[in-house]
Amino acid sequence: MLTVYGGVPIDEQTHQLRRGVDIFVGTTGRVKDHIERKNFDFSNLKFACLDEADQMLTLGFKEDVEMIMGTIRQHGPRDMQCLMFSATVPHWVRNIATIILKPGHSMIDLVRDLKNKTARNVSHLAINCPYHNRVTALADILVCYGQGQTILFTSTKNEANQLLLSEKIKKQIEVMHGDIPQNQREVTLKRFKEKKFSVLVATDVASRGLDIPSVDLVIQVEPPKDAETYIHRSGRTARAGRSGTCITFYTHKQAMNIT
Image (cartoon, rainbow, N blue to C red; front, side):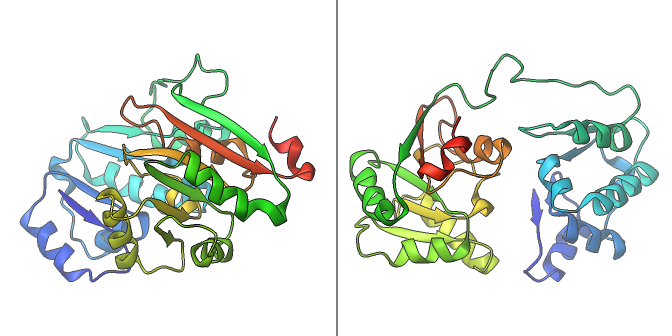
């Protein structure tokens, strides 16, 4: 398997691709780079998958996705199977699916019977806490609930950095956000998976794609702006059949975002 993304040298990826790989995983930008360099041979491709489709389209990668899928359809075999995965599928994603996927495609909804679409094994708690008391309350929550691995979500990179430097939080913590170089993010995630520290403070760069079964607590320092973000953040716990807890802090003015 070969995994590719931006921010790292492309030459070694090119070498491995031209030698041949069984499974290829990549971000849209780096996949486009390899297509433009003619490093792909799609003639024997069996499956093409889009993961976190709603997020890619929300962030403005629609044209990139259409270019990649169009190239794959043009050069791949006719019996190739196309799949699109997402934990949330708004109506506009369904519309895009009619363009990206083959005619007559099927929709499989694994959370149809869940009223709130969140994982069944997550306990959801909310704490009304004034902003000036939040760090102290966070420190107490980590002592009471954070016996295992915890992901602490903030809305901004600055908030994440401030919590990292807080003297009130006694747990071993590290931070991950968009200003952290890719290679350092990988080191941080590896250390977190190996339980070298117990609290990962992160922005939404950690809200998707992380499968760390040992995470038993997710904390949000304030309610997210939309339900989809809440679903993805809370879904970082209760993995692989385990149970977990998601705690959201809110102020009196944010109470309407909790219901």
